[in-house]
Length: 63
Image 1 (cartoon, rainbow, N blue to C red):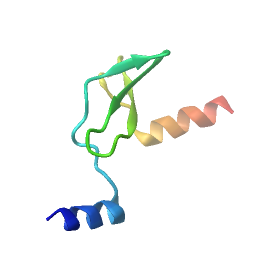
Image 2 (image 1 turned 135 degrees about the vertical axis):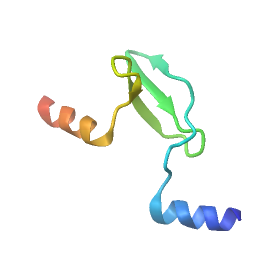
Image 3 (image 1 turned 30 degrees about the horizontal axis):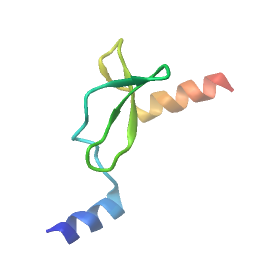
Image 4 (image 1 turned 45 degrees about the vertical axis):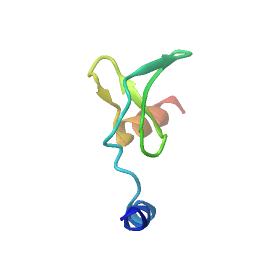
């Protein structure tokens, strides 16, 4: 079963369904995926993880 999961993650990536509580460190608030360790930016205004397209849009506005 673990081999199938590994192959699945290699092909499609982690879905980040198991997240930690929100952390704030040096002005950045994020949650951590407990399976792959990815840091996902978190918004206190909406109380959700910031979607990838929103992060890209904000990064483009700063340039």
